[in-house]
Image 1: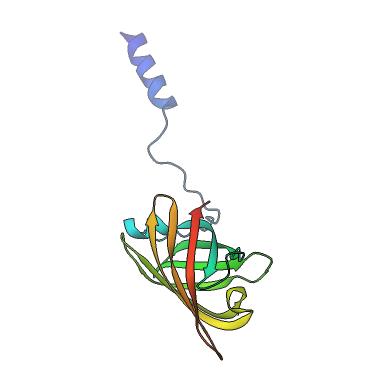
Image 2: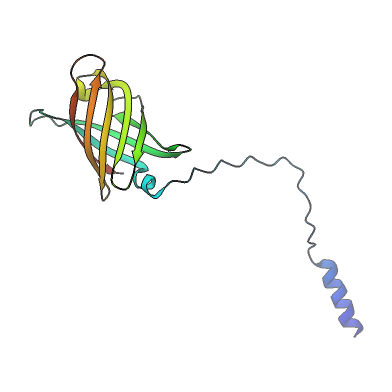
Length: 155
């Protein structure tokens, strides 16, 4: 019996204490968590490669290629657009993102689709699988509006 009591005392002495030592070193700051997205916003989040086509352009017009990125933010989604061959990201304001459509506004910026004029653009888009299709209207600071369509695929 003495051996059993001695074994219990030894095990109790060797067992980890519930009172863990407190780490007094400075804690590293945790990265802020990404804002939660609605199901509709998550449909559009990510990187999209696309092309815009002007209405009434000749059949030989291959359009303007671009990359668009949407990320979660405290206010919903934010985005950027960059035309191929350019180095400047154009901020995109997501006005509405629902299961059926997405509406955005961006600019002013220099638009290759409008003959390199400074424009503000609005878009209306809809999802079909991993593709986004829609229309745009580019309103220049001077001159006539340019409208057209776009198509993009999630990268």
